[in-house]
Amino acid sequence: MVGACLKAAVPAAAQETERSEERATKQREPFHASAYLPLGHWSYPVIEYWIASGRIDSLSPFTQPYRRIEVARALGKLEEASLGRGERGWLTRLRSEFGPELRLLDGSLDRPARLNLELAGGAEYVTQTHRDVLRPELEGEFSKDRLLEDFRLGLDGEAGPVVGAFRIGRHGIYRHDAQFPGGRVVPKIENAVLGELGSRVEDAYLELQSRYARISFGRMYRNWGAPKLDGFLRSAYAYSEEEIGYRVGTDRVFLIGMFASYGDYRSDTTHYVAIHRLEVRPVDELLIAVSEATVQGGPGQGVDFRLINPVSIWQFARRDDDPPHNKLGQVDLWWRTPLAFNVYGTLLADATNREGTCCQMGASLGVELPRIAPGFLLRGNFTFIQSLSYRARREPPLPWEEYSVERIGIGWDKTDL
Image 1 (cartoon, one colour):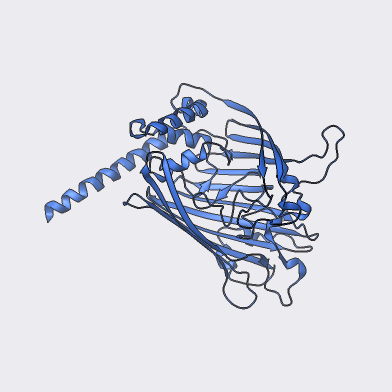
Image 2: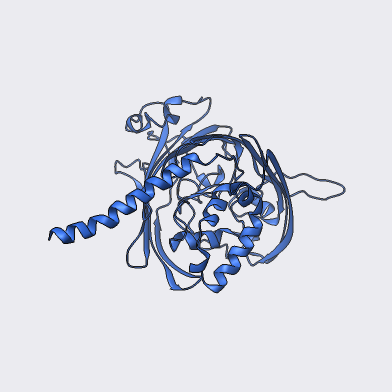
């Protein structure tokens, strides 16, 4: 019995020693500020596959986008001998894409500043322009076949502790999105040379970065959701808007959040949105996150800083006094099991009911099978969502206190704020 106990304890002790050495090595590494890898980049499916299969354990499966330097560091630690033939081809392409970051990490490149320019163009043919495939437009203006152009210009770079990006795109969906009044995401502008403009600034941010803290200003596409799912509280399905964002902590324990002010399309009001998310990864195989959010506002309503304080929000959100506000809470879990599959789940509660019951709910449960064959990942998930909208507890309800959140620019359709 004693021998068995000692035998089991040795690997655990060795594993803990290895982790301690890894943390010490990481603390000795110089910190490099880095721009973010924009969501929709071709490399994300490959990175996500390696996260699911356990080859990358330094990147969160829930919180995107990743910084370019973080991806490069994860690529540098991959054991090429363990990769399949097709995966080695992916790694070659990724090493070329992240070449400057990899050279910076191995000390062969001294980069006080970097500026990257990217141009892209293309088109897509669609049979309808409602972006949610589960809620198609079967008749009417948005159900027509269309060829949607897609042109993009992007700049990103770093200089010391400051990083930034500016990306502008012209896409046909900006004039034909069924979820916006008249289908228009951008205002109508007539130009004698270019005709009707359909361009939009998608990313435009500046961020100050240090090893354990970041603060950003501007707009950036983000997704805080389960693998290959749009986040309930924050997703890339919504169009990016101006905000103040922050992140404090390490790779394993961090608090991330944002605050924004949005105009309501239906009336001349302003609504203030705050989201905070605490993510903890006690071991490589397990990730737990707790999130909360509030929406508040109305005619002449200013911001209430108690509602954007990540420390006091849990106590204050239990009260229904002024200012009128809506509160949401969420729990996420991701677990890489010892049986060659991963499970993940999300549960959202939104206190929108006026009938005295608890909440509107959203939930998702999924399974990943990353080891069926080299380079092949199979996912299955079930998602249940009640139609969520912002409502303050007022009797009778005021017109400006209830609206469809797909019009203010955060989250996935009606699944969150």
